[in-house]
Image (cartoon, rainbow, N blue to C red; front, side, top):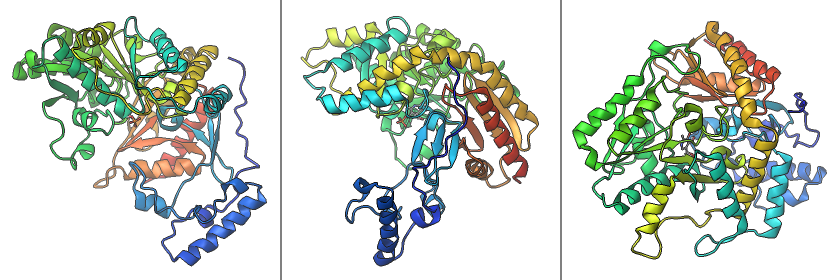
Length: 492
Ligand code: PLP
């Protein structure tokens, strides 16, 4: 790994607009709005960015139309944070202020931002084959990418269906599990088992097997035939380094569900090997192994949702290799192509694939897929991304950095408000004591203050979740940790 320039470059080309002028939510009259717009357009023209000036359609001062996901829209639009450029370990604000990325975007930009090989591959693909239907047609890159992914995955889990996101991967995996049980003559095995505090995206299947109350409560009865294991969060394990000691027995709850429903009705169990979105829940020692044993004993498929753990986050290509536990199906997305073009995938065993394909009574074996399945740009980006991971030994790098990362994070044990710290690979979770009667508020304030101090962290509930690009350097780890320490010290 060659040496890297760890100092941010302040952009001379950024749009040097006052954030307040350019981006404050404008609910006022059209004439005021167009006044701000024209100032913005003059500014763009001065910068020679004429192509961005699109008659009356560009209204960058108005934040009204975009309904932002998982965001308090009203709060954000009153005080927005904008990013206009990214490179390496840094995002840049419109004023050119560097923000050190402690979260790889959303766990996804593993190789760092604007990676030149990946950028170039996408540009070339766009000019060569902009789109190709995946139904009854193919293009070389999608087959090649599937082959290469198969080479990274555990042995014989190498039949790949492509999707466009982690949510679609979760739902695709659940559908394949059901189709498999049916294809092998067990259509009554239809139940799906998820886990409390799990996140498998926002589509109906993933939401139902997921275990986040707020994500489920507004959306009706959801998919039928779903039950949940207990989560593994346990404050007996507070401040554990790596995998915690207590809690393998949480897997035994599967025995109770099996006793309740009968194994002849259960198709699959889906878990995240490390749960990220609900605040970095590292599996207790022996937990995943026990889950595997129970699934095998009761003829139940085990699905690992590796949307965040895939592609080196733990120092191995996938968590299944890291934990040495072999699931039947693996979902992935996020870092699959460094998050440059939306894409996800589901890898299944040859047994699952062949059972469905060879037993099909219809020419089409699986009635499932997307218009954008295996998009040429996503595949080109994916192939280039795998090359970068290999050339720069980024998975090995994550493994090498993990002990430093662990020490740095746990140095926050004495920091104000911290009640637990969890880590594995290049993942970190810092749990804060919630403010009395105001859950999430303290963490949200920490997030905003860190951003102002030039570090991007992520918070979920009252937990700070960290997952930097795998190219991070040690001084940058220190910077993230010290920024958090300073910020927490100043918060009530
Ligand atoms: N599964 C897991 C484990 C995730 O962490 C996420 C997103 O964070 C998803 C699924 C959903 O992925 P997406 O947001 O790409 O739909």
